Image (tube, rainbow over all chains, first blue to last red; front, side, top):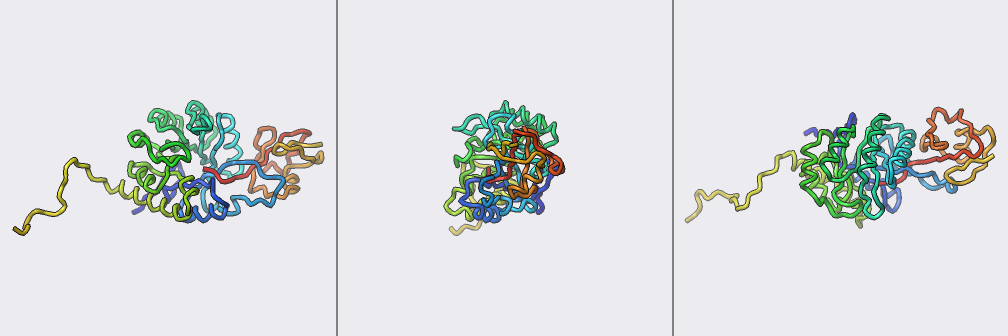
Length: 257
Length: 66
């Protein structure tokens, strides 16, 4: 069955997007990304280390020609900083697909939706294809879509917390009311969390810490790949109705008496 | 004259271009983006862009991130 993952004008096979932060080294990052089967990886923009040019670069380990780099605005707490980072990112990679996140505070890393909305508007005007990290608020998601975001990325729970999807009803509601892909970003702690996101009908899942901070990141990356595939197939298969009482699986006909 | 490169003073010659700077610090233009005084300089202009004294220059690349 062909099940293409479309984000704006871009098409992907894998519905798992993988973050590249927090790994022991780039070698481990590259191995985990490979095992995850991801077509997209998120990356951050930082100053080149001028003093030590021997320091390895991410691009030496993950080829941006083979795997799409999705530049993010991690660490930006206002619209101005986020715009600056993404304008640089576009020039560095030459692509328009970016992940916007404007954070509200350091402790929760919860999105500042007022700044996020403001920034989305400018980025869309500048012809960026913007995927937006946001609160699991159906109204905020609708506003982002109306402004021209190519995907909305509500949090399942706080970034790096591993608490999974705290408000399944909201995620389901957001998916039901969205015409752009809904990708659960943040909070995934283990493979079953990713399956749940997909079974709720989400179009994709973004995972970083759950893979990078597992004892065996490469094994977890593979588990995430399989769980996203399983969750997607489960959703597409049309999940059965729940019942409060038992329904026997074996017929009572011709039972021995 | 000098520029402020990634937050630190860096000596350059008067007519140095971005291309020459990147060569000096040994980094390929394909792996970075360059901003001068908060304005992104497109790669095709690296050969022509000459620094002014005290320009604030940022050279960035992609690192791991979520």
